[in-house]
Length: 256
Image 1 (cartoon, rainbow, N blue to C red):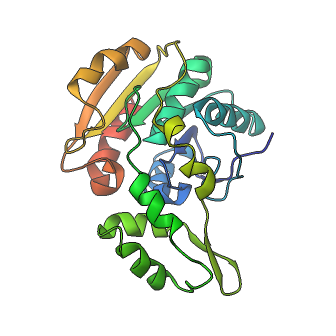
Image 2 (image 1 turned 90 degrees about the vertical axis):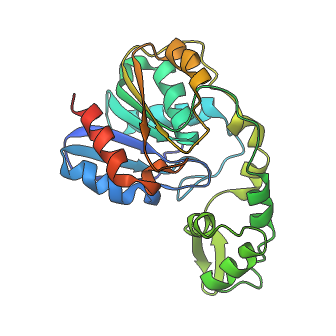
């Protein structure tokens, strides 16, 4: 079984951080450094088909959770705190329900244990139009994406995945072909019917609609000790839009 790529920061209680769809571990570097300074051994992980981790046609939350299990085994970590955002939050929830004894605390960022209809297709379509036989710079890639994605922040998020495959040849780190064909799997609810009875915090952006009031019963069904708090002035990317408040709420929960 292949091992997920990661960057490990600091020493102390192990904390695994799982990024969201089309993201990568580097998205969490700033917050990861803060957690490391506050006494955690932070594992910034690239999930399969993302970042520098391996590519595979097998892609659903069962596989993603098994990747986490293998990662813990590889580093001889009996258990760890798991923090996941969006798609990474569903991976974290799946893993916690499947292996509750291996999760000391669970922190889920702006996602609920429910099915979400596919809603990233326009982004994937725009990415698929990038012709790296002609594009030779980040600025040029941005110009092409801007024809279809006017939101500057979304384009900058996506372009973090640009890298040099070889001299004068750019590419994207995530496995676009597999991800385009996995939209239903990404939107699915976690597959477990089990529950995680450990300490759990759900953080939602107060401007986000990913976690709604009527989702609370489903959350507490799987996570009976869950508390749900809002990060102000933040949407779905709450950790990037209001990192200060996100961190304060997260570190307070982790240190209880």
